[in-house]
Amino acid sequence: MALRRGKSKFELKSAAQFGHMREAGLVVAEALAQVRRAVAPGVTTLELDAIAESCIRGAGATPSFLGYHGYPASICVSVNDEVVHGIPGSRILTEGDLVSIDCGAIVNGWHGDAAISVPVGQLDPAIERLSEVTRNALWAGLRAVVDGARLGDVGAAVEASIRSADYPYGIVVDYVGHGIGSSMHMAPNVPNIGKAGSGPKLETGMALAIEPMVTLGSADVDVLGDDWTVVTADGLTAAHWEHTIALTEEGPIVTTAAEDER
Ligand code: MF3
Ligand code: CO
Image (cartoon, rainbow, N blue to C red; front, top):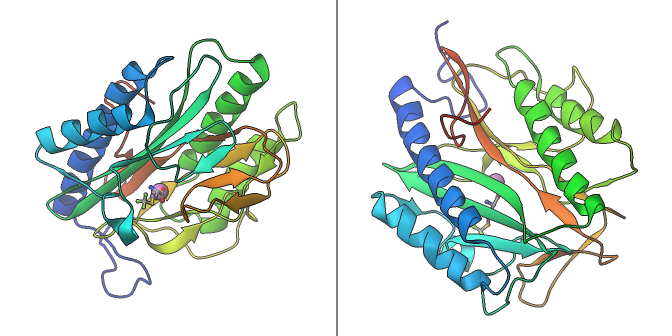
C-alpha cells in the first residue's frame, strides 16, 4: 500500500527509515538484556546505567535520554514505588525489589525506546503478578497496532487486558506512550486507557511507543524534588513495560524486541 505522505498528521517513515529504527531498537534490546543480567542484590542503579551506556556507544549508537531536557543518565531506573524516570545513583538494589529499566537509543537520527521490569531475586508473588499483568497489557496494545485500526483501539486493548486481571490494579494516566521516529516523543500521545473505534486511524509509516504503567494500589502519582522521579502517591509498587512498534509495508514490527522475543 502506498504511503499517504504529506496528508498524515503524523510522521510517516520510509522503509529505509524503519531500517534505522530497527537498528536502534536492537541496540536498546541488547542494552536492556545486559542490564537485566546485571540486576542483583548489592548492585547500584548507577552501575546499571554504565552498562547500558557502554553497550549503546559500543554499538555505535547514541543514548537518547542523556541530556534530554537535562536528564543526566542513559537509562531510567525506577525501583518499587517509583513508576518512571528514576535517576540512576548510589541506591543499592536489594532482594525483593522490582526494578523498571527504561532505555532509548538513536541510530542515524532514528529512535528506539523500550522498558522492562526486572525482579531482584525472589519477589512477593503479588509483585511478580503485577509485572506479568503489565507486560501482557503491553503486548495486548502492540497486537492492536495494525493498519486501519484506530488509536483508541490501542488504549482500549491495554486497559481491557489490565481490567481482565484478577486484581483491581491502578492504571497510571498522567504519563502515556507516544509517537516516535526522528524524535523520541512525537504525536500522537498513546494513553493506556481508551475507547475502541475512537481517535485517528493508524496507517502504514507510523511508529508508536506503547508503555503501560500499572500499580498495586491507586493510580495517583507524584514527582519527587529531583523533578524527574515519578512515584506512586500511596507508596505501593508499580511496574512499567514498553516497546516501540513500527507499521511497515510488511506489517507491524516491534523494533525493540530481540529476534527471539514475541
Ligand atoms: N523513555 C521515556 C519514555 O518512555 C522517557 C525518558 S525521559 C528521559 O517516554 F529524560 F529520561 F529521557
Ligand atoms: Co517511551
